[in-house]
Image 1 (cartoon, rainbow, N blue to C red):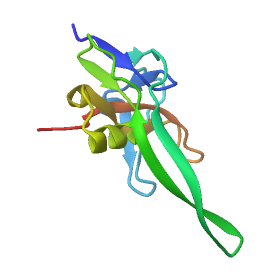
Image 2 (image 1 turned 45 degrees about the vertical axis):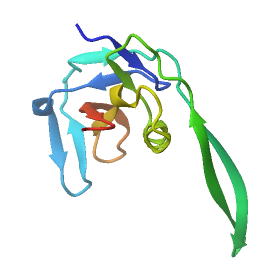
Image 3 (image 1 turned 180 degrees about the vertical axis):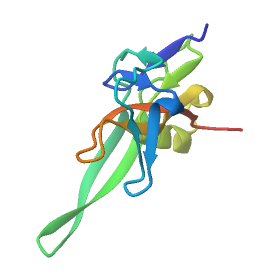
Image 4 (image 1 turned 60 degrees about the vertical axis):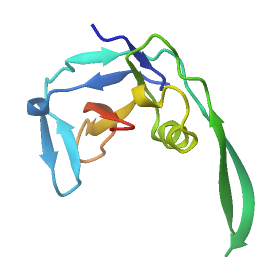
Length: 131
């Protein structure tokens, strides 16, 4: 059985595609009434990207910032899959950190309804470095 570490601040619900309906007008998968996730992965604690923001300029009273990534938290050992945020994944790839090959993000988010969609899960995982 896979050992999975969820480095996001929330649980991750994975749904079967058949339990969702794709709505092209809003480009989202909507979970069908009564559908339940096939797996729920609880959070193990947040893995952070280390980011600094500096003010670059102001345009029409809107402050424009520059983002500078300085690193990421250490990827936990002894796990087959480590789920992280897209920001963490991007910085980890840029820095080519140890453990980047076991990083995943969520793939194809699933939402609760079409009118005021809120994320409730995903259809699966996306490998950060697929080589």
